[in-house]
Image (cartoon, rainbow, N blue to C red; front, side):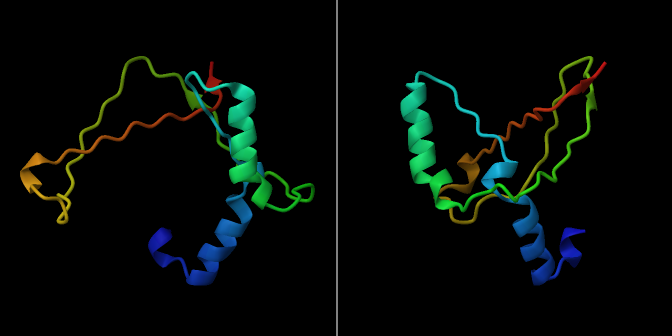
Length: 102
């Protein structure tokens, strides 16, 4: 459906779904937790208005548990701005953090 979106459709979708109260923020590593949360709040979350009237609308359905590892190789075009097109690689790792069907 993305190619058929109008500009107004895109703006409405963004307004409805893209808000800090409708997201999850994950961090890992050796960050001091209190300092890290303070930084995220100061530099990002505090810029948004009160969200008491914002209702969560994103529902991600449960997924069946995988029985084995999954890998997929997808070729894509090279970056034309790279200095040497023969020395390019890309990697994407994705995780869906939702409930798992039993």
